[in-house]
Structures are given as structure tokens and as C-alpha cells.
Length: 237
Image (cartoon, rainbow, N blue to C red; front, side):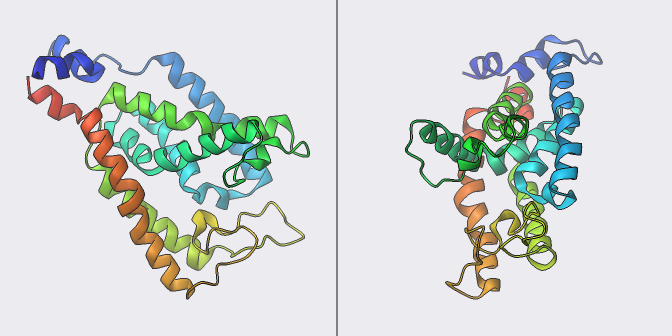
């Protein structure tokens, strides 16, 4: 059984076959260059269009972290965004696909079909569709690092506090409609108005508890079971 686990994991297989002291890259150079080129185009466009606070979104943090994960070939840096955005972004993918056939679930991807937005802008935003797939591939290549759950949770708590106390609530101002508001949904699930179900601080607290318990933890358990950790697989030979 242990031999099967090693053979199914490219990172473990490479480690088993590579002489001590010699490191073989797990991520092809073309993949690193292609992804970096995409991010190099996206970042200045987003900075100009939406401003720097746009990069406080979990998905944008994951986008940037993946650059480091690919070049450093770090299981931890690949595992953290995978734990954090895999389930939410797969829901984005589902909403996008069913919107194509005219049956949107939430309307969260309606902007992808807005002809008032350029194809270039929508093409950049399409990273929401393929990034979770890329992250799964990276974890498959590098191995899953179980520390990702705690590390990503702590990171999101910092981001949520910053967005709640330092970033604007919805709606976006009329003179700057592209200004990111309600970043990471700290003010509710509506981009037009803050939630009014409960005190704002209570909602933030529930979000900080709910995301790790309902989103990050299930993803962590699945990834750990399917991919395991690189060190775990190798050491079980």
C-alpha cells in the first residue's frame, strides 16, 4: 500500500528516484513562466482599474501566493490558497457554467456576461475558473502540507479585520464605482447594502468562525486524504 501511495504522488516519486543532494523540479518551467506572465498583465490592470485594496480579496491573495508557490515549489504555499479558495471558487465555476445555459444560482458571475465590460477585463477575471484547478495540480505535484489549514485561517482573520475596520462598506461611491467595497463579505453578502440581520461585529465574528469550520476544514480533510503530505508519503516507504 505504501508503495502505491508513493507511485501516485509525483513529488514523492521524484524524491524516491533522485540521488541525495540533487533536486529535480516538480513544476515545469513553461508553467511557471506562463502563470507569471498572466499575473504580470493582471496586476497593473487591476491596480489602475480597482486600486491596491482589490488585492485584499482572498482570491487575489491566492493568485499572488501561487506565484511564489510555483517558483519556490513550496507545498505550504501551494496548500494554503488551495484550502482557502477551492470550495468557494468551485462554486464560482458552477455558477458560471449554469449561467451560460440561463440558470444562474446566485448571479455572482453575471458580470462575466456583461457586454459593457471589455473582453480583456472578463478574460482576466476568468482566473476564478481555472485557478482552483491549477492549485489542485500544484498540490498533486508538490504534496499537501497539513499546516495550511492553520496558516490560511490566521491569514484570513488578519484580512477580515483589516477589511472590516479599514475598508469601506457597500455601496461603492457614485464617483468611484470600481472601488472595492465589502471586501471578503465582512459586511454581509450583498454588494449594495450592508447586512442588517445582526450587529456588524457579530456578523464579522460569525464569518471568522464559520469560514474555517465550514469551508477550510472540510477542504483540508479532503486534500489531506487524497494527496497527503509530501513528507508523510515519502516517510511511509
